[in-house]
Length: 139
Image 1 (cartoon, rainbow, N blue to C red):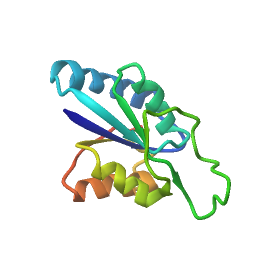
Image 2 (cartoon, rainbow, N blue to C red):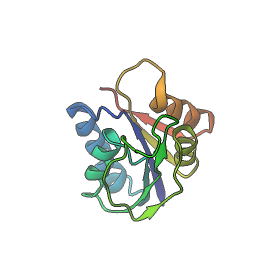
Image 3 (cartoon, helix red, strand yellow):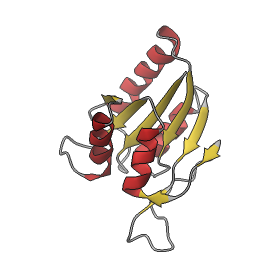
Image 4 (cartoon, helix red, strand yellow):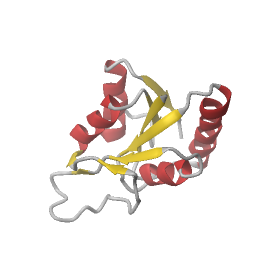
């Protein structure tokens, strides 16, 4: 039983990232027979939404971790309109990202670039420090 976490840019995934992620998901689920039981993502527009739509093809329980920033106010401009099987508490972005990592066995990451700043790289670095397996798909 494997729990997958996901982090990525609000700018979405590139075709290369989508292709490589698809190849890897087939290997994990079919070749290695890891039995993916849950996937966790942050419910943002962009890569989270791409991953959500992509994972619907593979099945499995989708757990959403909504987040917000200090400038969002009553609006949630970065929230994707997706339906999840289970919804976690809405938390500030970095806290939400730590929860995604804490609940997964493997973190899949699709950063926008290699400049190690922002939420995606924060999550990657947190996962590495936590001893999680991290797979980065470069743009």
